[in-house]
Amino acid sequence: MSKGKINVAVENIFPLIKKFLYSDHEIFLRELISNATDATLKLKHLTQIGEAKIEYGNPLIEVKVDKKGKKLHIIDQGVGMTSDEVNKYINEVAFSGAEEFLEQYKDSVKDSGIIGHFGLGFYSAFMVARKVEIITKSYKDESAAHWTCDGSPEFTLKKHDKKERGTEIILHIDKDSKEFLEETQIRSLLTKYNKFMPIPIKLGTKEITKTEGDGDDAKEVKEVVDDIINNPSPAWIQKPTDLKDEDYNHFYRELYPTQFEEPLFQIHLNVDYPFNLTGILYFPKISNDLNLQKDRIQLYQNQVFVTDNVEGIVPEFLTMLRGVIDSPDIPLNVSRSYLQADGNVKKISNYITRKVADKLKSLFKKDREAFHKKWNDIKVVIEYGMLSEDKFFEKAKDFALFPTTTGDYLTFEELKEQTKDAQTDKDGKLVQLYASNEDDQHAYIEAAKAKGYTVILLDSPIVSHLLQKLETNEENISFTRVDADQIDKIIVKEDSTPSKLSEESQEQLKTIVERIVPKATYTVQLEPMDSKAMPFLITQPEFMRRMKEMQLTGGGGMLGGNMPEMYNLIVNTNHPLVTQILETKTKKKQERLIKQSVDLARLSQNLLKGEELTSFINRSFDMIK
Ligand code: ADP
Ligand code: MG
Image (cartoon, rainbow, N blue to C red; front, side, top):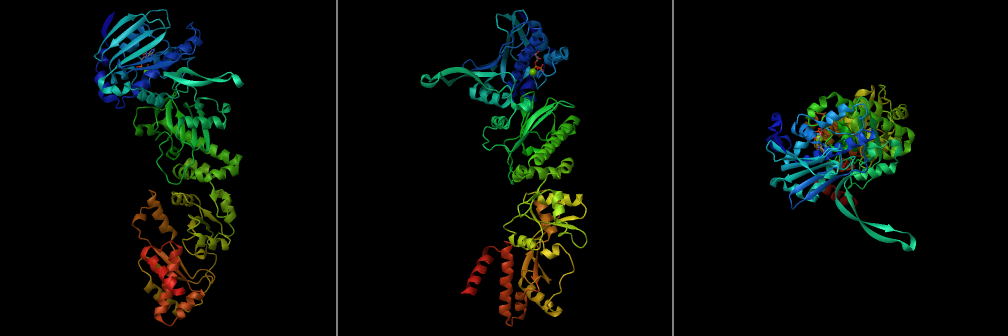
């Protein structure tokens, strides 16, 4: 037996480990399972290259909870360590055995999946244990070693009679870490961090029911089997050509067991130069309310779960997607701002953006109808991406769709082509009309359609920002909501038709109307419109409304918040009702007619509410009785 002190340079590691390095004590288990996995993968590699002349078999990692004995065991069937190796890799903490192994076998070991320097490593065990034992037997022909350390820097190292190859780590759990003696807790940690690790992990046993024999002889038998926590071969490490849609959907449910809805489609990521990255991104149905999602993209490193906060790694607009990303090239345990400045991370983020754009484009090209059917469920991501990433904007212009009120889904180019004859105004500007709500803006949409104009439907919350961007990117195009003005004013083709009313009558009319409506809210505007157009119409100027919307959804439009609600009240001087009002002799009756007309205009814009609405209704009943 030998005694010694762990390498002096790291003497102070224990108090640090306990208090400071990780507030997440639970990660000790991830570290120990990673080491057990490494040890097993090393053995696999050594048998493959003929250096270890033994049968590799079907090794697994076993986790045992001994609540009574207050111990947790992690047992593997990997390479094990000789006494010398324990001295080197455990006692002289400065060495990383994984690093040395990778260096020694660097030509053949490339895709072995050995994790090595993951986090804090073996010593994280002391975050939850007052004493740790290692009983280990190397695959080499040497007797087993037994290392014990109680958290003071002193250790003991003795021989042990363990016969089978591999390593058993025994943690004597501290009294303030009792939760790690609960099997349910250990199960949930293994599920969180190790669900897709490459070596099977066993936690206890379970009973399953099997059918034996067939036909009349068939009977159900119960059998006790190992309870394996993980799926050692998750979809993302497989070849895309080996997977069908149902395999991807199956994996989606494995990732998010509480999601019942199937994803719309997925993108399988796979690069090894200039960085290493694999993964699968799923497009779920995304509703308009940008709810914070709980099922997010998960980040892995060599199949070990790291975090589900991928901010900085995945461009922000894609954080609405789901799935996994696995890359050993993403620096961990660094601050988010460092992450954003890291060149590799920037490349990864650009790569993901490009892949997503390419996939969307190919879906659009392959089956346009299927693509437009999904449009409403994916448009928020695409529109958000167009707004926030210029590279994505450029690509998305080819497949972003503009649905029309007549049920077409046009690309931007097609929209311009379809509208260029009817909707170019006299200054050469191409005016696109849009509606944000087909029901609320029905009257305005109908008026536009009657003129032969195309109205597109844009209802996502960030639309005002996107239109702003499209307008700055394209010369001579503007977007106006159908109810922003009366239709002939939006697309000015010629100088307006003359008014039937004399200048004097017009002045008189304006004065009467202005007396009745609140001046601060409504600007009265007399317009000689078509006699079939509405007599009274309320509009809200595009600019003002858009600024307000942009302010509500954040960014842009600094002015918006301070702007009062302001509308235009347009009076059609060519409408017979207007002439009739003007000719009404009794002042009281005249006022009543105007009030009623204005209220009808407000009603059609959903601006009549509460007491005003009630009195409008009562008044209307009185009029028809
Ligand atoms: P790293 O994994 O980065 O090398 P660790 O502190 O986690 O650092 O582990 C140190 C070394 O101890 C490992 O590289 C390995 O050589 C050895 N080791 C730890 N756990 C085991 C194990 N279960 N089987 C064999 N060797 C192990
Ligand atoms: Mg390790």
